[in-house]
Amino acid sequence: MASSSPVVDLYNLSNYTFYKKDPKIEKDTSVHERLARMRFNYMKEGMRTTVAGILLIQEHNHPHLLLLQIGNTFCKLPGGRLKPGENEIEGLKRKLTSKLGCNYPDRVPDWQIGECVARWWRHHFENKMYPYCPSYIKPKECRMIYMVHLSETGYFAVPKNLKPLAVPFFELYDNAQRYGTVISEIPLLLSRFQFNMFNNN
Amino acid sequence: MASSSPVVDLYNLSNYTFYKKDPKIEKDTSVHERLARMRFNYMKEGMRTTVAGILLIQEHNHPHLLLLQIGNTFCKLPGGRLKPGENEIEGLKRKLTSKLGCNYPDRVPDWQIGECVARWWRHHFENKMYPYCPSYIKPKECRMIYMVHLSETGYFAVPKNLKPLAVPFFELYDNAQRYGTVISEIPLLLSRFQFNMFNNN
Image (cartoon, rainbow over all chains, first blue to last red):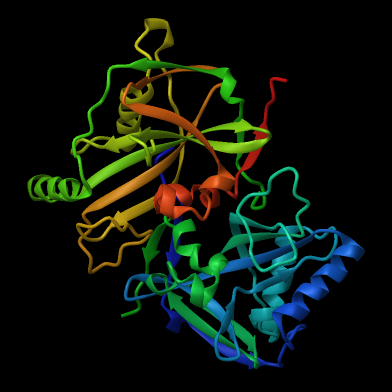
């Protein structure tokens, strides 16, 4: 039916256990360095495709987004760059395992990847991204943002240099200055979803 | 498949014929008046539900959104307020016919309503809307934005006091100052769609 919304189940943060694992050192120490590496890779491999996952929990019946904080301020979604030719879903699973996956044999994650909720384009070698790409632009990056459905409980292992945060939608929305456009727009992108809130208490 | 995107067919603006019909006088002459009427209706009927339609065409292989301009600056999506208890899809069809429908018997529109792409909430009696509603808020309005799929050709009749405009996505995006948040965010909300561009020439 045209009027039905997709439903997503959300559980309390306390249903999930977070471990630490070896740090994943960031490849770049500055925006300038990052754009230079992008330019270099573009010459070798053409447009880069990156993927990121939306992992949600709830507190006080309000959806929260799982972010990874680097240093004191910068936050990012779990995800990363695909290998040339790699399938998006497989690549996202690989990246989620690298950023969040437990290594214990019985706690290996079985990621449930949902639909793509947004596609962002980097038109030029600069920070700004756009949600469309005119035909006369040769884009430098395409970033696809996917829903990731969590089970009722789960185990995550996060690299020591990253700090997992659960940030409420009301804090993210309209706050591009703190979280960047891609993250701050997620509450809007999910406004068409219906959230089923499950409470432990 | 999780990685497939919904596909939308877009045709040139010249495939559609626009007629004029009797004006639809706006109920309010100022934002202040509008909020006062909202408050009055809220006391009688509770939260209002409004619906709006996204109608797209393409020019130069770039998607354009159909807007209705009132006066010299203000633009809005075709749509309006549902009657208490009215079904959203039926209500949107009624509103689209009132704002865009031809009266000629053989040109009566058969609206193809697609999925809901966003839900906005008015938390208080003010202009600002949010893409979420915390449980402690008693919302004053819920606005649902739907895709409307156009056929290859079509006839529209627009009230004389409204001017139909086809505005390119690159002009809408990041331009809340000119178009308001609800409209300027549409390119992002549709970034997950794949557009099939059909050209006449």
